[in-house]
Each structure stands twice: as structure tokens, then as C-alpha cells.
Length: 280
Image 1 (cartoon, rainbow, N blue to C red):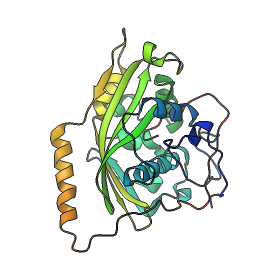
Image 2 (image 1 turned 45 degrees about the vertical axis):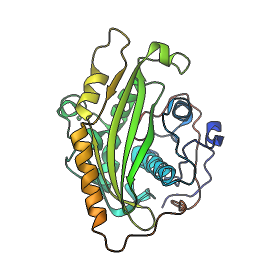
Image 3 (image 1 turned 90 degrees about the vertical axis):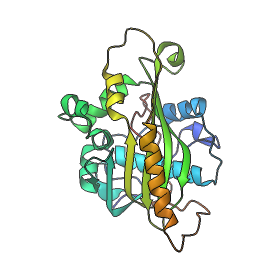
């Protein structure tokens, strides 16, 4: 069973807009040490394009996704995950669903990029640690994530998001001048229960183009925006809204964020490496 403990977050988490990650401490972290979100939090606060007010549905969903990312990316034993139900599954771009056991073993990059031919050819044979280190090396100053808009609330939460990092930058001080900004836009549908535990997540984004950009040879600084095709986005929004309109007794709106996994756990690793995982 995961050990509950108060997790001391980096100082940037004192900022009211900073993401709040709430999880319990597992017996073992995937990469040995607890994750360090200091650099990616600073990147989020400095470069985010959207402001989600504390207590709003948008902020609740954003914090839930970021808490879930801690577990998905950094807890190898899915039995210690606090943010999901026992029958949790996840997929990307209508690909194969990963259950808790498989998602825990492979890590988030493999689960979310599994349907991409380029991932199969270049990265699938590598371990979760090797894959994580690869993307961390490409985006040394972090791969930040922000929620843009919630289209439908529980039980099927549909939302759009922006993921961004600077390829080629070596430090936060020079990333905008030295690195190429890569912005990945996407859309997700998360089915949650009455306690806001996630049962299923379907994600849509241009993973093949993302890999093409990250793995390409860069001879000059070029900023790149990778957007989800509008026809896919509109179709998925329509699908979720249609399903919501057929509910005869809508569930009550969310008033406050429930505790996820008991005591707040927040651990600040002392190293300088930044988290570069999906949804952080």
C-alpha cells in the first residue's frame, strides 16, 4: 500500500496559479527518486497562455490531470495509483487501450504514442527509463502542460490542452532565444466517477508530427505549432455533447476538489533535471 506523507513542493507552488499535485508516496518510484517539478512549474507560470481560476471546474480538472500524470509517469505499480478506478484504461488517437497494469509497466510515452508508426520504429523497443531520458534530453527545460477549455463536465469531462517545450535549449535563461518552441495541442475525454477518479481517458493529438519534429535534424531555430485537425476536434466535441444531452438526470456540478489519495504528498527532488513527461 502507498505510504501517505506530506509532500513539500517546490517554492513556485506557493503561487496561486501553480498546479497542485496530490498523490500518495509509493514504495518505489519509477526512476528511483521522486519527480522534480520545479523547472516545469516555473515554465508553466511564465509561459502559459490561459488562466484557470482557483476553484473553477477548469482548475479542478487541470489539477486532477497533473496529479494523475505523477502516478502515470512516475509510479510503476498501478496498484498504488490514487487517481483512477480499478478498471481504468487509456488510449490515444483511437488506438489500443492500455489497462492499469500495462500502462504502469510501459509508462506514459509508450501508452500515448503507441499508435504512431514512428514511435514503433524508433523508440518502442526501449525501456520506459530510456524513453523518458530521450525526451528529457530533447527538452531540457521541461515539457509543460496547461488546460485550455472544458467543453463538458462530469461524468465525461471533455477538454482541450496545450503542451509545449523548447528543443535545443540548455537552461531556462536562454530557452526562448536559443531553443525552438514546440507547441502540441490536443483534446481529451476523461470518464470519471462520483469521486473524480478516472475510469477512462481518450486522447487526440498529432503524435506522428510531434515525433517528426522532435526527432528531426534542426539546423536553425524554428518555432512549430502542432494542432489537432479541426474536423477531429469538432467531431469529438459534438459526440460528447450529444451523449450529455441524452442524460435525463444530469449529475450535480462539482463544487470543490475532493482529496485524492488521502494526505497531500509532494516531494521536491534535489536534482536539476526537469520533468518532461506528457501532461505535466
